[in-house]
Image (cartoon, rainbow, N blue to C red; front, side, top):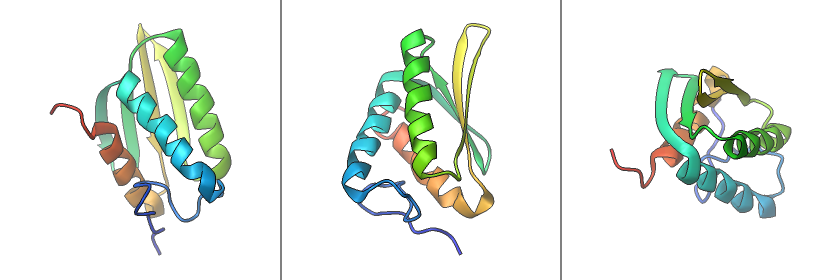
Length: 115
């Protein structure tokens, strides 16, 4: 049975163990990362999202720290941060039963961005 998506937070699943009061702050942190650092979005597989980020030590550290905290409350996510060939990428994978969460996360990455 798919997890319900919290309507007010967009992609925070009901299975999230982060206290409810902390969820809007976490979503805001991800939104800020998406706005500041995401330069490209690809969906190579239904269960995998690839975000091309601005190549900088600060953005790498920020993405690593944020995704480590997120994995602590939503352990179904697999985050892979890759620094290679002058590029920085963050891949987000989920099991098939959480594809709706990844769909909503992808929608947040592109919200407000020009097509």
